[in-house]
Image (cartoon, rainbow, N blue to C red; front, side):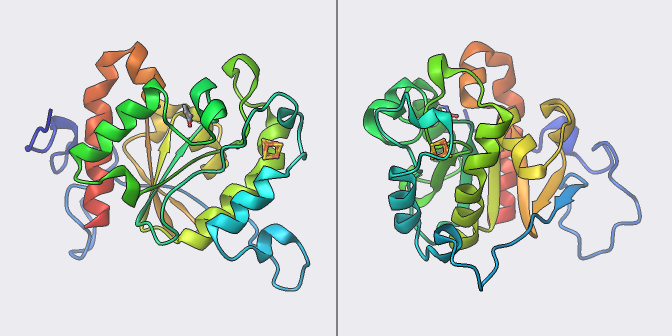
Length: 233
Ligand code: URA
Ligand code: SF4
């Protein structure tokens, strides 16, 4: 599955928008800069338990009692995310599916098996990656999370990223990309750029569940995750 050569769209000069005036220190062959977004950071002086949580375990405990949105009603388990507090890569998906709700673990169903393979292909054992979702409770019938549910849950994700301080974030699918970048663009238009979230590079790619339905997207996904890999090195 590993394709060692740079894919056609990423050769120098072939990337859309890659400028010829890039300074010599720019990492070659990376896509151009995308959206930067600086959401309000937590205030040191508030008593908000989320901004005071110091570990991803503390966030998981808060999530386990959370009733801030209607998704708490149908859940079996909360799925806060898992991985080391000091992971270099954070993967963000949309929300727990059936198997995730049953187990309390992110990305363990069919889409998760594919994610594990994708990570292994860039030499990242999944236990070295922090893997989580935009919403921490399963939406009924796996529907997309609604705007108010995302808004209610987002402080947990923001704090998780703040604690882990990854070198790179991989946003998988529309919901993760649009939420992290506070943008409305399509996934296709957000791919092929290095975006930033609070200064951390964000790579946008297809959701593994979409890849299971549409194997044609595997190749572009592979291109995206290799960019993430290069930013980690
Ligand atoms: N899809 C997601 O977005 N997240 C999971 O954890 C599983 C499937
Ligand atoms: Fe709380 Fe998020 Fe679950 Fe909603 S989805 S109840 S905000 S943890």
